[in-house]
Image (cartoon, rainbow, N blue to C red):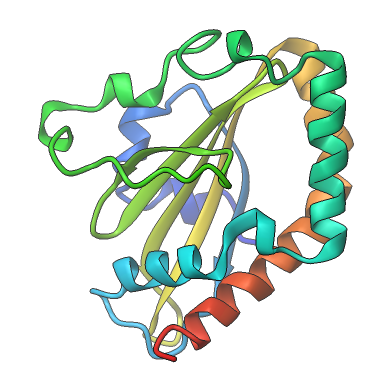
Length: 195
């Protein structure tokens, strides 16, 4: 799972650029999808959904998320009043008219990030709480070997100094535990998509 420079996200003509100008690019990663073609982004999304999301992650990842959600409940970080549509407006409210009709992807109770839009080559999901407003952007691009690959960018708008401190505190867990496990899950989902 190669981590990429922010320019790998910024230089692409993604529609999310219109919606999230004030968000910082926190992370950009690529995921191997051998044999993928230009029309396979919906296939990849379906494979990822079939793989089960956060609830089907490894025990260490589930443990980290359980601790995070418990802390959030205890400290009030995840109250509805701090979420999308309350503390911050949803990026869905910014969708241009040409994206309204077919752009909202399915939501799932097991997935804390809620759909903003889903297009043929990209999708975006968002989450907000007392620490941050964040967007997970997925895009489908031609890789160096000619196959298409999945790219994930994490965009963040911290909620003040506390949000910046929070993002710094969770960085080692993201890089050492969460992203490697996510990579294995998503790349395995691509490999198993036709079974």
